[in-house]
Image 1 (tube, rainbow, N blue to C red):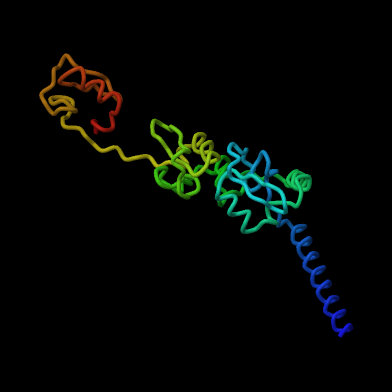
Image 2 (cartoon, one colour; image 1 turned 180 degrees about the vertical axis):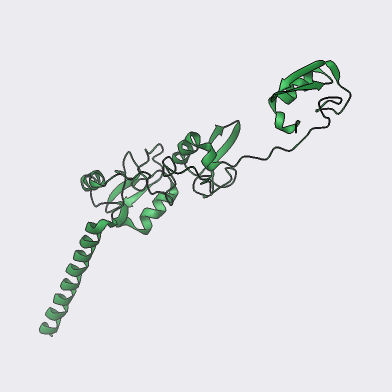
Length: 225
């Protein structure tokens, strides 16, 4: 009985040592992807943490994240983003070569700053975040190009502010013109007053009243072909 118990314990210990060795070897081969310290910067994306409400316990210590998506990612693979101590975390992050864009939410924060200009939007900015495609938080929003855009987290705002054309689709402007701008007013479709005119997009356009002039100047593509 004693011999069997000793053999079992020895087997368990060897298996444990083997697992530890494999884990260490795996991390040594680059499995650790952490980009932040988990206190001031998100361990998944490296973004500065502006709201410390998103946090959880890892290896007996509290780790902060920039958003719920990053927390879920770390929970799914703790060893890839969190070290057992803060000191070890800082050392590991410092040792990492910083990539051109950090890998958070499927490379969503900052990866596009160095991109080739192709459209990278994943959401409409109304119900889903334009950066991650995740459901938005109605409290996280910003005015961009005259429109209110909603995001899943604060970290997604800056990339869109810096490169709105990469994340936000241009809305098609409905054509509202009713006249040719020569004999009939482009806004009202009524006969023009030849004294009311303005040069818009390189050509002279005539209007029925002064109010229509300003309307077309503000949005020429909606009234002029």
